Every structure is written in structure tokens, then in C-alpha cells.
Image (cartoon, rainbow, N blue to C red; front, side, top):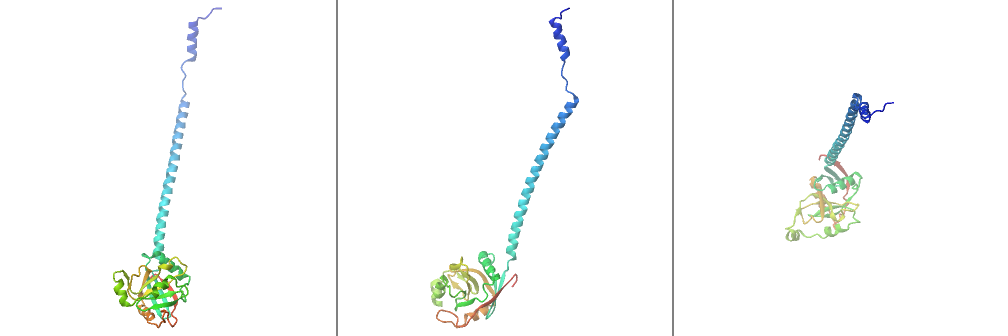
Length: 238
């Protein structure tokens, strides 16, 4: 048997192996897989991008709606109160912008009927008429009873800011209390900013305020006849 030389074996081995060729099907398959991966990544990115954008838009809409609701709520609050008293009707314009917290509390108490039957238990001529609980005066009594004569007021306090006459306020001393006192000034009062939270002014019924101011009182400035608030009606317009 003839022996094959090593060089011939090497040549035969090279001929058998030859270069490895990639089929067209494999190339197409790989390209399709790459395209699918790219499309999947793009779809995922687009989904999360839109979701983030929608979430941001929703938050902005909710924020704007909340602001609009707050402004609308403030706008819709009654701006006027008609106080029916045993002496007549007094119309008050409420200062919703300058005293929102006090006005809110006043409106809430009006809706609960808190002021029905409330008496004006302190009437001080050329000063204030006061409505509230006569048995729970507290700090308010100190300054309403510590009244000076007209001359003393002008000479001692003429440099201090004054509230005008016919202003509606409540005692700062009882701002956080459950109750609520009503004060209506009957003259420009010196240095009253430290005593009252002013939250409105009388625009109609000044003559009724003056009539209440003229009633007979005892030494403690308590009216000898009953003067009370029958009801308070809230309105958007006077």
C-alpha cells in the first residue's frame, strides 16, 4: 500500500475545510433581530416619555384648577351682611381681602345662627356699641370701661392712627376664642388698632347705629332696655 506524503495530506485537508460562508438567511435573521430590538427600545422610551409628559400636564392642570377653585371660593363668599336689630337694619360691607380669617369665622358663625338673640350689652356714646356675652367680658371689658372724655382722647392720642366711625370689628383679645364679639365704632377712635380686628364697615343704617348709641345706660354703660340682634342675612350684593 502506497503511503501518502505529509504535504499531500495537508493539501487535502485545506481543500476539505475551505472558507466558512454565512448564509443569506442568517444575515436577514440577524438584521431583523437588531431592528426589533431598536424598535422595542424606541417604543419603551416613547411610552415613558409620554407618561411623564401626561403626568406633568395633569399636575399643572390640577394646580391651575386648585388655584381657580381657591380664587372662585374667595370670590363667591358673601361680601355683605344685613344685621337685623330690635332698632332697625344695619348693612355691613365685609373686608374679605384685608381680614380673610376674621371674615371666614364671622360667616361661619352667621350660618350657624350664633348671633341670633345676641344683645348689645355695652353702649358708650362717641365710642362703640358692643355685642357679645355680657357674662364673659374678659379683656374687652378693660378697654371699653376704661373710657376717657372726648377732650382727653384728643389731647393724649391725637398722634395715633384712628379707625373711622361706623367700622365693624371684633376684639383681638378673643381672636382665638370660640365666641365672637361685635363692635361698631360710633366715632373715630384713637389707637384702636391695638384693640380691634376691623373686618367691615357700615354702609347703610348709620342712623340705626346712632339710635342705639343714644339709649339710656347705667354707670357700667349697659343699656337699660334690651337691644339685640334678631338675625344676620348674608348677601353677595348690598
